[in-house]
Length: 531
Image (cartoon, rainbow, N blue to C red):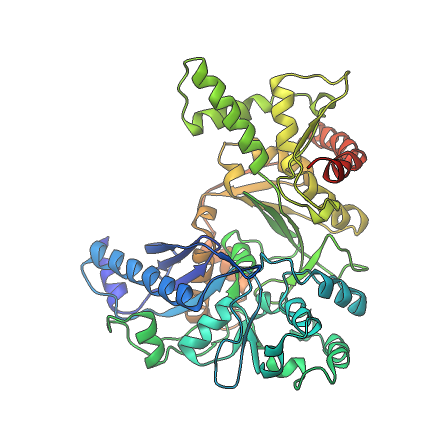
């Protein structure tokens, strides 16, 4: 009841999570049982300036304040009291990128987001040096690229962090980062839970004489989920809430990246579990029982917020191409005088795809609206391909495009599941592709040959996952692991639907994948030949 929640709000028996996504900053306030009780959001967009994608410092701070103010206003509107304190706060943001500062705490260059691919030469050199896959979006790749470029600001760096680490530092004065995000700044040793000592030494030897620092001197301190990461200072409270209502002294949990909060929000941090986020892009994260036998360019190695090793397959393309086809069919429906809502159109076409041949009748498509590094395609060339013997009908056509949405992801996941023998007990799916009941789940289950669960709470997103991490800081019992906290206190009793893989679907997807891999030279040639 609102009266009971009002008492929780007044007593600070709540936790606040704020996540900086690519297009929206979102705040969620939860009660002691991790149930959302208030929220607020702020829309924003990155800018392409001087050849790089960025958000300004003003964008960051103004967005933070506006998001918080809207959440606080939601509290007052619902429960009739001003928000003066919370039990704990946590910040999350889009992964990695490049934020560097001098000894006067001045930002040396505009924030370079994960979206920039300018650090690819540095990433390739570091991958060869470490024998460990370093993606171009990782912070160390951005740093080394700036060194290779001879950028003048490099000599003045005394601190490097990520977006959520920056906000956390502003509000607490602490230069710390959660281990999940740290693993995308610089490789982490899952045993010591610190930056990999051998790779630190290799990097320092590489940059010796080029910069006046050692890499470990500028990186933030690593903390694990459940460890206190500082407290809200008076200046931090005024920065977050200029109205002056918010009090200082509130504890903060370690700041984490959006990959980590996604794992928390889907209860996917136990070994042999994982999650797949399927929207404009798609990525799978599988918690590993042991390290992979070697480095793979298709697989990023990161960690959970508790420090366990995770294999991540990130693909640039997922639903954009199938959305285009759905829109095309919507145009045809309107020409025919039939007015269908978006949800009706998607449901109709997705359910039709269920009736298609298990191998899509010999049809083939590539959903590459943009480049796809997993399959080595350098530019966007969406294609639909068929032989004269292919069975072209609507149900096979739609099934082909839904298979293609997971095509590149399956190529990467097959390395872990087949070549490396990684065991997977369950996957949780979240994102727009799963909105139509059952269809996306069953296709993903066929792709990875494992049960797929969709939770109703997954739609709350990373801000909710961050609020859970903040709440874990203050309500956990002695010795209670994050895994147990999620399993027994957050997700127990929450409703979800699970779809097991159908053996016929699995066999059909394998046939499709063989055709998909064999046909990749076609799309690569289209990149070279079609302008």
